[in-house]
Each structure stands twice: as structure tokens, then as C-alpha cells.
Length: 544
Image (cartoon, rainbow, N blue to C red):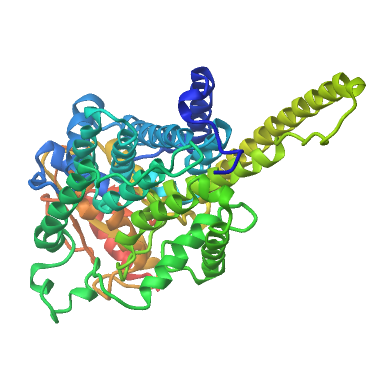
């Protein structure tokens, strides 16, 4: 074991750990606090509808905690106000970041754990996980997974609480399915200790055995029930029936390495000057970054200093949490990095710890030194050590500030980046939250009668030269608004007086049974009463 191996966590001053943990949470809040200003988006309305009994509740264990129970708890308290839900999502992310810091501080120096915690807390790849309430499932899954791993450090019966915590993690989201494999690596790294020699091999940990059994049981349930129910139509869930072409189809092919290099590239390409795209798709532009991360990790294995700080275990963490999403053929999303980034944060912390130890290492004294120079030499060494410590803390402060500033600026850029036309945003979560808010606020001002039927018709059709009565395929702009309203479910959730919603492609007489909603691509609208319909039809028919 290297002589500069970090001090065990038990020796860190508790006040220092608390202060640095608060710093991690503060950095995450600085980067992501504007999420509190946004409306509900897309699947949020389905979860609200399930909590209100408008849609069937989730019955099985699939994401029950992340997609059902959390909304059951919040809806009686927050009603239909989005800010408390966003606050819960942000709080879950900050709690996850702080818990990760605490876990790292058990293996590394507190300042190095701070760097790793902040790297995770402000990483822009997690944008959707914080800004989209429905993705709170990812945060909850990792919180419980980190809690389970932390309990493995104990030597008493409390270690068994890791099992129910892992079960709660799986009930949040299946992304932590391979946590038992990560636990094996974590337990192996723990047995290396800080004593300067490896401990003798111990029998396989019974807690980890039960964790593995829990994972196997959930995997069997997921394959037999959840996957065919929520991801792939039942008729396609048979060999040769085209299940791979389904939205969440899985398989073996070139997409495995393309997905891996995209995720690895997004992990290390997080700097404001270098990030050029935020699209959730396989990203060849970052393949070089991804290959660089792989090469760097293998090079790091040659360093005893990095291995002593968990370099191998951190890489295992990253891979274990990334493997479940690599087989997906059609989904490569930034926020799928939520759990894997915990492993990447450990790599960053290990590198920071090794660098800090090198900067503050004491200077070796000469083999022989005259008695008259002993006092002066000791004073010089003391001043030099103090200077090294001061320089290290100054460097740490600068690094933390730069990471936080970079994260905050990139998050703001993703949030505000325009899309094609004024008023729209490139990020779909932000864009559709803004559209849904515009629609609902305008409809509230229209004072709709109880039991009303709403027929949505888009002015974008006329702008595109589509005359009344013509019904070509749905335009992107119409589909974007329809998706923002989840096919109209959002209106039934937010506006109790709305009986039904339909998206139509032509203006036809309806008598007094319905109202037309003439909407723009950004969601702003006007409500057409039956008496207004003839003039609207004439105007549309005369459009070029």
C-alpha cells in the first residue's frame, strides 16, 4: 500500500465532512435551481392521473415507487402546483449527490470526495433527470443503491438493511439491477483496507448473496411481465416477431458499442467550450472522448496509487450501472447516465486524491544533517508543508468553483437553447413543459363550461398551405403540441371541467356540443365558439 493512502473516513473531522457535504448540495442547487420554475412535462400528467384515479394504478412492482407512490404522497400535499414536485426532484438529486460524497469520503480524503461529489452534482448530462419530474425514479433508485452499499461497510447486523434498501431501489427503477455485482467489487475493495496489506480472503458475504438473489428474482419478473407489459407489445414479445423493432427493443449488434462510446463520451465531455450537442441519440461526435476515457482507465490501472484509491472498483461501478441500458436499440438518453456517473465520480475523486497527495507530500530530509541546522531545517520543512497545504486548499477551491460555474452555465444553455422557431426550445422536456403551461393558462382564462368537449386544430396547417378539408399526415408542430398534452390527458388532469379532447385536421360544424381550440405551435391559443366557426372556416379555405 502506498505511504500516502488517504485517511479512513472515521478520522475525518465531522464538522469538515458536514461542511463539505453542504458544499456539494449547494453546488447542485446552483446548477439546477431553475428547474423549480417549470411546469409539468409529458409523462408527469400520466403519473398525476394515476394518483387521481383517472388512469389505472400501477399494480406490479415495476417502478412503483418512482412512478406511483411518490405522486401518491405529493398530490395530497402539493395538489396540481408543479413547484413542490420539482422541489422533491431537486431534493432527491441533492440528497443523492451528498450521499455519494459521504460514500467517497469513506475511501478517500474529504477534499477529494468533495470534487467527486460536485462532479456528479453539477454534471450537465443529468439535466433531464432533474428538470423532468417523472425521472425522479432514477434519483430514488441511486439513493437507495448508495445506501445499500454504504451499509456493507458495517460489521454488525445492520448490514442486512442493505437488502430492503436494494429492493426499494429496484421498486424505483430497474437501472440498478446489477448492484450486487457492484457490491462484490465494493466489498472486495473494502477488504483491501488501509493497513498496508491485503486481508485474508473471507467467505462470500451472505448479504451479497441475498442481494444477488433479489436481483435474479426481479430480473425474472421484469423479463416475464414488466418488459412485455410496459415496453414491448405482447404480440411482439416472441422470437422472430419483431420485438427488436419496438420502441424499447433490445438486442445484440453494433448499437452496443455505439451506445457505450456515446455514454462514455458524454461522461467526460462536460465542458462548456467542448459540448456541441444535447441530442438524446447515438452521438458519433463524442466517440473519441469515449475511447479516451477507456484508454485513460486502463492506463490508470498501472498506477498503484490510483488502484489503492479504488480505480478498479470505480470502473466496475460505472460498467455495472451502464450495462442494463446498452442493449436498447432505439434509446440512448443522457439521463441514463444517472447511476453510472456515480462510478465516474469515484474515478474523478480518486484522481483528485492522488494529485492532492502528490502536491502535499513532505520533502525528504538529507541522510545526514549537522546538529546546528536541525532547528532551522525543521522550521523550513514546517513552513513548506504549511505552504503546500495552503496551495492545495486554494487549488481545491478554484477547482470546485470552476466545476460549479461550468455546470451552471451548461445547464442554463441546455434550458434556453432555441429550436427552429422563436418561442420553442431544443430540449423536449423544457419545450413541452412550456407548451403545456401556455395551453392550460390560456384555457383557464377562457372560462370553459363544465363538461366541455375540446377540438384542437392547428394554425400551423394553414401556415403550411394545408387547406380546410385536406388531411395529410400530422405535421411535426401538431405532434409536438399533442405530445406536450399527452394526447389531451394533461387537460383532463389540470382542468376538471374538460370532458374530452380530440385533435382534428379540419374545421367542421359541431353545433353547441364542442368548442374549437385554435392553437399555435408554442401552445398559445384562442377558443372558438360555434358562432365563430363559419368565419374561421372561410379564412382557412382562402389560405394559399
